[in-house]
Length: 274
Image (cartoon, rainbow, N blue to C red; front, side, top):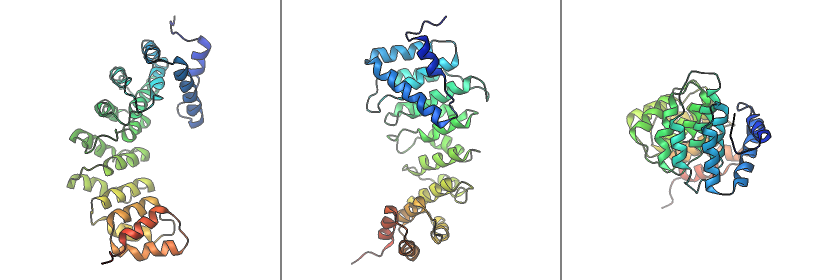
């Protein structure tokens, strides 16, 4: 029998959601935020999380991670307990109750954007068979880690080849937005320039342009000649700052495209005034 310090009805409500449905998940985390607020103190919040984690049922254990996932980023009292609890979560085969638990653990780690301690615990989940878990790894690399250590580069480079487009997209962003720059990394990003997912291809273009890789120039010429060229290609043009792109950018502006990044790209590609 459960000895959780919350009413049984509330527990049922917290467990009653579909983590593959966006609206249902949003409602679930609204409930978790309400529970978090009502607990009022750090001790109470960690105590309830620990009580959830101590339960045998994996969906209940997942609630411990969900409770800490709503924690404000500017505090770090929950980080080490979260890391310790996530380390106890086994990586298992696809399907089953364990999927919700692994998704919850990876999500809670990914929500800690400003603490380098979560990097290695998060990378562990890159081997998970569930694409949603691997996506949490790609999107959750702490912003404060730059450049990335070799192991993180290795893991994210492998995720650039993931079968899931969201995983590839966010892995390209995570790698592309850091200071890391090696021939191997550039080659891995270049292989995504014509990815079937347009966001992934755009992230790869932006990443290579930031590194002044010449392979991105013909791609930008092709993409900026299209009326629906978007933000990522404007960003890439601004990063590359090649005057050859200026006529294409100016034509987009003349045709009525309004985007602040387009204007930034035009300025970056314009010859400097002596």
